Length: 207
Image (cartoon, rainbow, N blue to C red; front, side, top):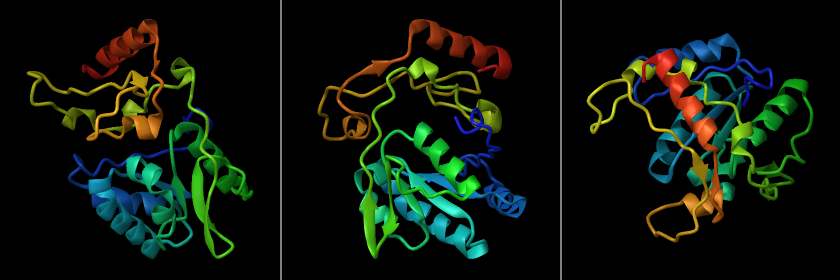
């Protein structure tokens, strides 16, 4: 979504990239305006440590933290010293709005779906409405990811990836945050979009 809006993007997947620390240093030196970090609750400690590391290296970088944990606990995440903005809910359109404002120096106060420090406290803006037409979203930036390193135990061949083709869930499983993060109403991509993405992954990356 950021590239579609005209922003230059790099992705570091620390889970599979053995040189992720070097990649991080290169990206900081590259002069990025913002760093986005996603985290579930088990990952939030490492994510905040990473945010602190980025800020210590170059304080001018705006650090944005999103994902499940920031959606459920936006105040706690936004309160962290190294975090400039916590993004709650679906992040595609919020990220584009944030990067547009950061690059042109405009205020971020009116952007829905964020929490940030303001007037001595934490301000949590209203959530952004769910994206209704998932077909309108661009495909993930697979070409920026080290797909050759992705595999799955149940798959005989590599690379193997998973696809998210719907959002929202009407069920209430206590071990899952899908309904909290994405809402209870199911929204799905069309069969044509899903098959098209599968064909593209197969043709371009051999998935």
